[in-house]
Image (cartoon, rainbow, N blue to C red):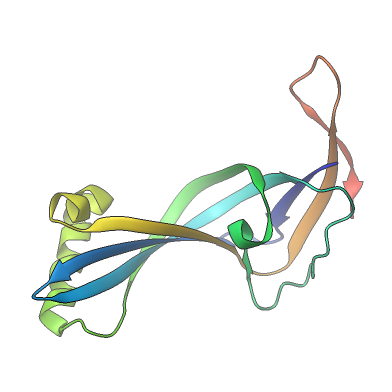
Length: 144
């Protein structure tokens, strides 16, 4: 069975893009959160997925599911995060790079993309789908 999962509220999906760089013998890691207005993912499961639809702790979707498709729409904000080891000056430099030209600027300046994590936050909506033969459109079987 194919399922569709989305958040009940807008701005409930966050991508965390992790970057790493060697600086003076240290490995520095930072992340940029991209906050999306809306979106959904589809995945396949043999039975009804074991999900807490209240989702109070957030759901790391790629850790939980073998995702068929993830669609996100309308980015509405970015937020940087830094792990220990950064000086205030280094944090400012990374933020300035990102503000000037986004992810491309980080990569042009030696930062290497190492991971992306996608989180669904807040209450979830799960729908069962089926694909009819010879069609592309899913048929909703109903909210679970």
